[in-house]
Image (cartoon, one colour):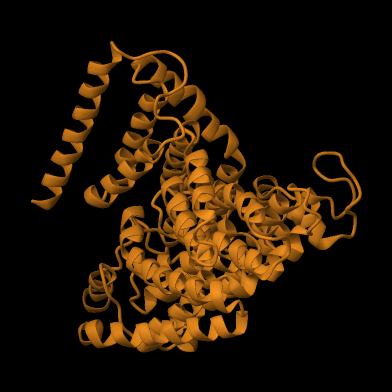
Length: 541
């Protein structure tokens, strides 16, 4: 009954939008959109997010957001809106993300090869003996996520494929697996000096010409990145205390009591060859990690001339990461890894060449949902960008700077959360806000460092919560779960840590001491967990 009502609501909104567009098209004017640089620029992503949460259906919700955004950009001219959707949204979305699409397909093929070899099943059997509890399986997933800090996309998909046999064997829901993946991927990248995220932040800070080294600024900001650090404390606490709350409770109960993991149809791990060994999973993953790292270093110029023909970074590890392009480096490494993995499995005689090639289309098909959602999400970002949402946020921030100076880190955090949530991009968010923060605060002051941290933490938090975030989409793909189920189950957890972080940034604006603020944040997180345990813990098995 609820599904029927949700579908009717979606159809009603769609019809209303189309009728409204037709009715105002006659009075529309050419030129700049009337909605540009105003709060209305945030309406398309907000509409898509609300519809997705209500209907539990991501594709139509995202597409409707794109349509409404395109209509607003074109001043409700249907032909102009269609031109925008095709020429400025979807086609560029596919073209600009071709590298990550290729990486997804290659990784999907590798996952299918590992499953067919029996490596995943063998790893699952080993895990049943080595990891004997649900707590151990969840902590192992968390630890692996911490170790893969190079890139969030790579983290999500690798951790998902490796840990799925273990979490499945311990009847841990795919919703919980996807949360553990998502809650470590972006946060660990945001506090790791050698990562694609550190490179992006450093690039933004360096481009401002302030004389402050971008990587030094990033490192100084790490102790104040409360959302990322406290998320780790929260994960460990909720696993050890063994309880859940919100929509996650239902998913975990079904997994434990009925064995219903909540994965996508036909997403269960294939048993594959009975001759498979644990090494058939471990070795491909190690090869993939090493070659993807080498690929990113190569593209960044570590071995000499970089991808763009420039020189000067040979032997500079951190500099090469700051100069790399993950959309090129990851496919570069994964393609070489795929070739070596196929050769390895053929030499092991766990599959024939024909069977290996059959994994190619299967790998592509398994990643189609993620690529579709990513295309729609990026198209929605294009509409939001065309409407000038970032300029509206810029003006809002500058207006708050004068009267809320000591409270500004907390304000920056909230603004970053909202912007990243609405646009689905953490990189775009700190790209917009870092220049504002550095202009507002005195150069190299403690308050500026706290402000930068608040910006980065808010960007990660909003990205973590947003249904249109590419990292959230990757986490859903890694855990093989319906995307909207992942979003709805992790949202209460992310918002809990966000609330604690907000309080901590208020304190930090006055105390301005990283150690004291971190201790306060950890105490608040643990206290919050015990309060939640007392309220919801009785329902835990």
